[in-house]
Image (cartoon, rainbow, N blue to C red; front, side, top):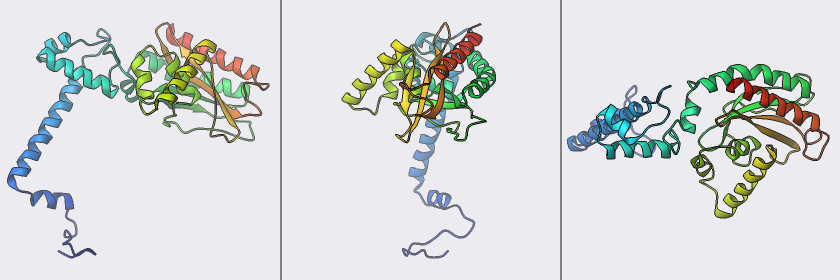
Length: 274
């Protein structure tokens, strides 16, 4: 065993320092830690069992249903549902929440969106010469899910798949403006102060009125415009175009681009709803 630069004994080569530290802990502390680990694992297992109750025939959970199927008392079942709702796995009515959607592609409508969108987005990008993006709602904002880059443009503006967009992003605003679960908006705006939250609520009202959202990209001369992909039940995704302010602007000559975007989103929404 050697000595490090601070005069402390270092673990021998090939040994795991964490394992060494644990082996030196008092027996009582080690036992308490093991009990805490078992309790945490049990809670995770039970939460997974609660979520597993969601299926094609059970679209929302209730304390009574969870208690009956898992052998819990109703108070405990309700606490689990509330915890899963706060974490984003469930929505306000204890149906599938945004985080569950973000982590899983099991929902039939989502599978259909992911299968149908690439061809529609490729056509949109080719027709406009701009990058087309599809985003789904995560816990705090839009999550970029599909990207079709412009093939013929000298300047290609793009975004990485998996990027979580901020609250001011056009795609986030579209998804929140048409969101049927008010808790989703609360989560996305959780870090805002009162003035910012009020400004965002006003911005969302404008998006609902006009069914479109615009945003500057980092003030660098780039712009995004987004519209909702709507079905008979809810907003399922946001579809957007990325471009320069010269080619894409609320006050510029981009009407044809916006109409093409709206048609593409309507087509995808119709395919998912049918």
